[in-house]
Length: 269
Image (cartoon, rainbow, N blue to C red; front, side, top):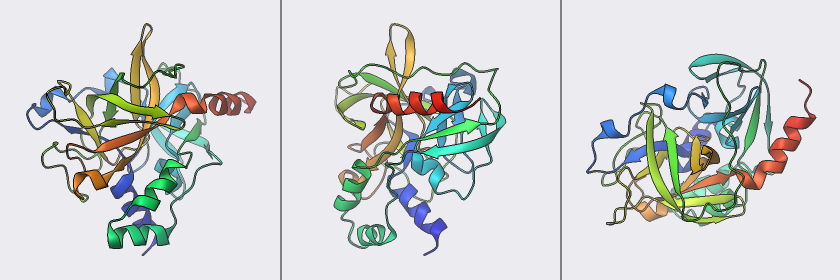
């Protein structure tokens, strides 16, 4: 198995951020225009990030680490040259033998333990500051539990009854969905794709193809960046991603705020 295939399998099985919708709501209600979130960054091939400072994009580490070299990304629909990428030193790429075991037995326990202990975050420094788009502020609170979050992405899609196939396109139309945080601690906060009477009108889950995309929480100043979509637990969905019951875990940016601010501050302009 080549490095590309290994990375592809990892991303199909656990890297996420696209929007999977309710089966009883028209897809058109989830679709949005790019102008509604211009700070969204598109990585080459697949994967997202968010502009958090004029010259800086934050993303999931695994969204960029599998690519040999990222020379250019899209921000606000415009190509932006990349000066450097800084992957958090605590990021742990899953080893091939562990992935092989999980694929052979569908026991993802140790794979999931490794993901949960990894710092899945990276910073992308652009060659030139972005002057035509306002950066998004990072949510400074620690009150994610129980809050409604807004999730944005344009990767694989489907609905909660049927899910989607691993082979489906990983870049489709831009969509927005909402969910409620069911757990938050340390590196992560997570949510459940719900099908109960208490599900949100535009309840949604995550799918393959757009890891590093924004998870937003609203406060008195507006929607702020609380997290980045990172990985899902497929064992709860009977091997089919995107079904109701899927749990998605997101990089909790409050946990990394000092690392982000400290690294950006020490870099020359």
